[in-house]
Image 1 (cartoon, rainbow, N blue to C red):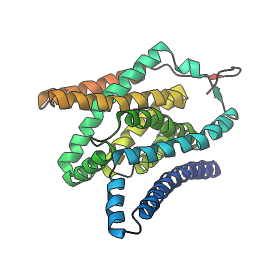
Image 2 (image 1 turned 120 degrees about the horizontal axis):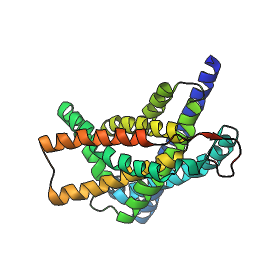
Image 3 (image 1 turned 45 degrees about the horizontal axis):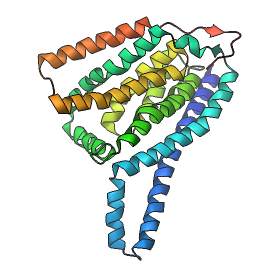
Image 4 (image 1 turned 30 degrees about the horizontal axis):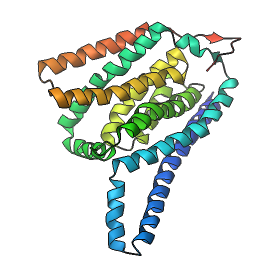
Length: 286
């Protein structure tokens, strides 16, 4: 059992390392490539190059394009890897996880988790306001006013959640679960999920979100289900942001009541999810 724990932990860390190298490597290569093009265009003007590089690094669309490339590479690497490795394990029907009851629960969990996460962010703001300043700067860079709605939809709402769920639940959590208990496997994968986002505030709430997604994977046994929840969660953040910008924020007793209600709805929805049981012969498996 000890050897199995070491093996599964090593495998999950290998997956994580591959993803981080891809993310940082692609970002570095993209910055260098664009910088070289501008340097040739500006005929060696280093001052102009420095200013241009600062502008590029802070450009929302550039950051999203680089992130989107990284997500697609993750899908190309881990998609076939997941398909091959899952063939050797216990089979679970994807259709069994995608019942109407489970899909309704996915919508409720994805949407109302946003309110619960907002409570975590408020607590962080009250305790460590400096962390929030760094977080807000990062969010403005990633989702500034110049950000393309199309890129936001493709990168943050669709491709990003699928790529992250494939890696962190489909690959890492599933492997960790072979050597560890649910809680240990969920904590390890959620910690790595938090580190992956490379921001303290985002890391804190993505840890809780990651743990929740591990709970959902444990019940449904397919990353496609957690991808749906993740997509709804990311998409609803933009919807709620638009509502807040248009109508203002709630405060005091109203927002606290909404936080409590949201937590209750999420927990109730999780309990409603039907457990996906293994199948011995099915043409439609995860």
